[in-house]
Length: 74
Image 1 (cartoon, one colour):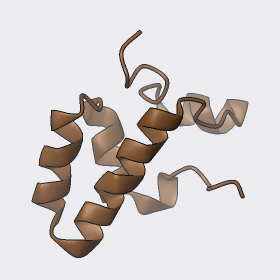
Image 2 (cartoon, one colour):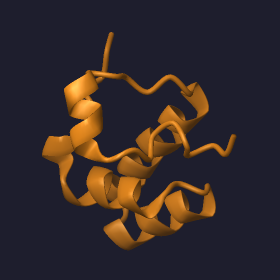
Image 3 (cartoon, helix red, strand yellow):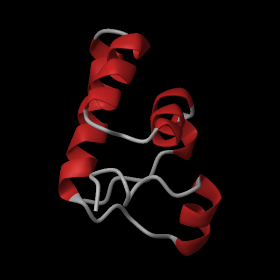
């Protein structure tokens, strides 16, 4: 199973099922990508996420549509 397969399902399917990300490594990569966007630029974040094999649909969702990101559970 590739690193991004847990998080690359369509947003609507995730929202309907209420599933949370179960792969801690993928979660960490995506969170770091968001931090890179905040500190540097969206382009830098895209390159970081691409270099870590995050699916393009996920990259678009988390960087360009923050309202569609999963809620962080504490």
